[in-house]
Length: 129
Length: 129
Length: 81
Length: 81
Image 1 (cartoon, chains in turn cyan, green, yellow, purple):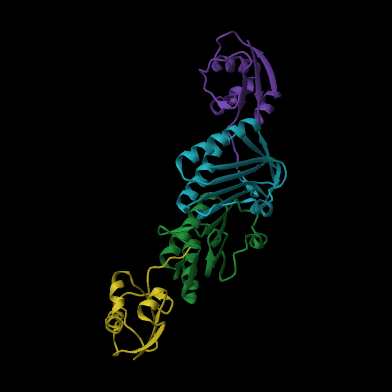
Image 2 (cartoon, helix red, strand yellow):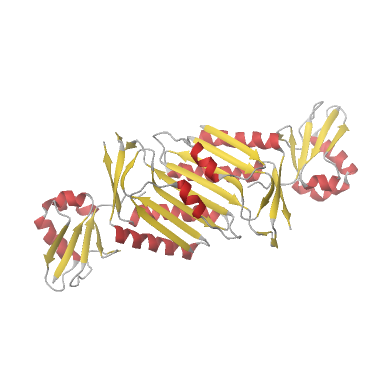
């Protein structure tokens, strides 16, 4: 399974990420997920979230999740970008792409990745009023 | 819920579809799904699939699925492109985008849309050797 | 009573026909129409258990009562995506 | 035995500190280290039930036996995405 991870302060550029995708002739499903900053956070109106990562551990924990995915499903590739620093409302903080032969495993792996990330990857956020 | 549907012979241009997305400040999740033509279809190697739609009924059946989604989940928008005619291996035949406040409902609605489409929308495919 | 019948996908190959006009007695059901069509196009019988039927843009079952001018579609299981 | 302790996210605010060097007796566990840190930074006690602990890049529990040079991180529940 191909893995690709970026933890970056620059905005997530979907248009630039698309052409970097390469899928083999056995791939039938591609899923993208974008996590976007919402205006309401814990019932307060915000203008941005300030994300912070303990980066070396975040990278390691993402790699462990990738290992679990590779062991569980026939996924061809996973790409993840998580933005840190200030991310304004309406901007994506997370971008995930999963490619697989069939959609069932692609959806399962993509949801698993996000659920696990939210449990173990040391990234935190603070509301910016 | 915003709905947008195209059944088209032209290739699906992901790069052109992205900037047409507009999400409100309450949106936290965007999911894209791409269905891609695989080289192996029913254990035979193919070069393309030839898709055919009974178009007026396909449009109506998609609209009924959109209604069900709108009744079931707080989805802000659904966009669907299904290609017809010859679609080569490695090219997408289906593109779906769902935007919602939270990822749970976005994933559920996206999978529901594809599952229902495969049951009721009159589109067929034939392998091209 | 005049009914238009459309054959989609490989039902076109089975029947060698994409559209046909059928005269059926008033009050006929889809079931009745199917029996008539299977006499005319015996290969349709091969697909008896995997035939989907619509009138206009809605799915209907065998007991649907046909009306003058109905457009009936016969087709195999759908395969979008 | 010398241990580096890192505080992340709002644990930095609670302690007013992002990194501190602690001397602990040989054979000390993370549990022991935590008790020492809670004496030094009493506000950490407020978070007792929602403190995550890692050594290097791996999560560890209170009975982990510290080694010379370990880098221990204390932080609140993670919130990526």
